[in-house]
Length: 151
Image (tube, rainbow, N blue to C red; front, side):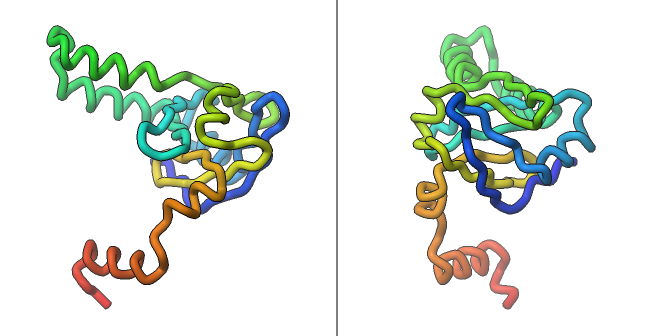
């Protein structure tokens, strides 16, 4: 399975191309036959999520299994879900092209931050990512609560 960890700074060129970090490209090459990624605009946070094709297909299948696409409400939910997603390709240099409107939405100009989230990774504006994090004390407390105070 994919394992995207850490956070890595990157630069965007004036065409909106970002070099996918080598660490992430190696993981993709190991597990994927294609250089395709599914890019989803996050509905809550100012970031985009990039899923390897095999991971995206599992998520899509899981979501569809909970829906009746003959039902208008379910169909509208699925339509909105898929309308926020697009297929992007890594070019021969290991770059991915992000549309200008998406870069503006996540407030990325020349600097970007790739953040590994296990089976997928995100692209953020560095300041926005740092603002989204817990303070150290709060992070420790939340981890202890989730892990049952094993310290």
